[in-house]
Length: 112
Length: 150
Image (cartoon, rainbow over all chains, first blue to last red; front, side):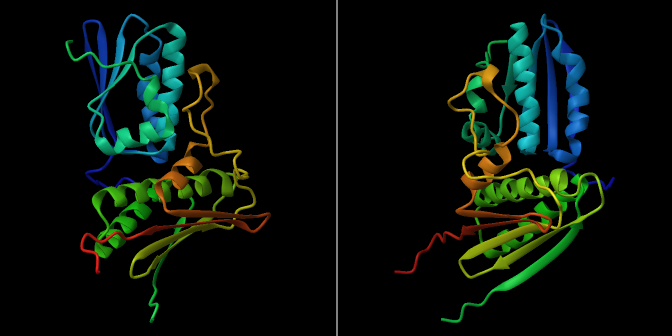
């Protein structure tokens, strides 16, 4: 279904020196999980870059999305590479806290 | 004493693309009843997780339908998500309801979080699994009114 809803999922990648930020917007659910995976896959393996996901405009995430974040965490942890979530909306942070995934994210350094 | 219950029933293809339609309907019904923004967000997650499971596990890649029934009571919204699939991710008490709180990252397995979220976000959840006759998830949330009658 390609209806034009404003909650439609989108991911935009921005590369900076030393880091890569992916801005998410809309609803990250089962239907767009493959799209999200596709965006993230080429970025996960570069241990020289800090990988940051900005969730400011993310409206919704389900357990599929949380599962993908978890697999990225595992991969980055294995490479000793940073993976940060930034500007997490309260409702989504609540799910991170409830499921317990919150403790695995690296603390965000706002100084950058 | 007149327990008046109104029912809204929607039937959708068991496909990932339709789960957001369930969320939109839920939003409409729950906001009309007067649920808070936070409660509606909680219910959105819980109901979507139930639908996800029907989409992923009920029909083994074949076409099937998911039925969602909203039962509007005066102070309670009850939502039933059912499919007629053969198999469902087997749900047995305490086996799938895992969180990551007591785990190290390398011990973490992906999956099972959906059920945990349903139970954590709703007031009441029950799951009926009948071999060959599909799965039914019934969940409910009480409406907390800001002005309580004394």
